[in-house]
Length: 257
Image 1 (cartoon, rainbow, N blue to C red):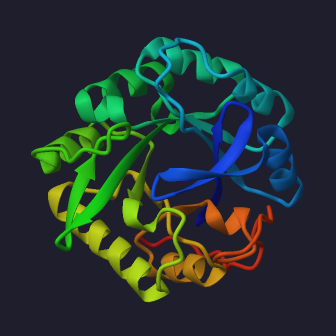
Image 2: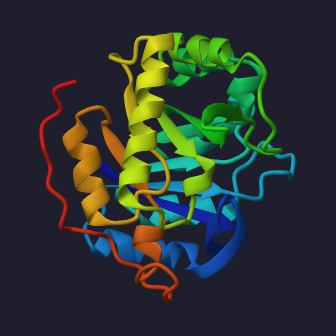
């Protein structure tokens, strides 16, 4: 079934939403935001810490609070660069971990995570930018282009994580034309499928899907297995005020990929 996942970014105790991965806008207390989403029937929540420069083997207290009060399936991302921190996340009650920078630097780290926690508990975030209409993989923390990224992506996926979250930086927090967003995600999927076999891994679109029409169209492509929505659950619309609201109007279809 097509998955619609609520993406909640946070810094300290504050839930925020970024634009192009910067300029975070305050939404409210993290736990309260997650509770509202759960009451509205959210399927899954991806909790993503955006302030990940503090070296620590523990996870933020607020993340532990979320895991304690929220029953919906939870994924935690942000600063997971060791088995110890991954174990702390899983031990706190999260079903899944999301890892980005570390696996780009050391692709074999995916294998260690899968062996330790199982493929279904391992999600990999891959962030891309468009340079002269060509896709370029970025490191998560510095947003620098990665050399020979096709080989890195191939290695990551061949280590068999449970899912891959694809993001296009230019679409984060923006309200681009629907045709453009769907077209670029389709093009990214087709490009990656020429590099490595994607049939055995769940593929999610990670940002820029900001309307229920976009969810429907992405679903109907039958390329992606789900989507992570951020602005859609955070605001009333483009340029409008904060409104935490999980969409219920999308259609769900069986996957045939």
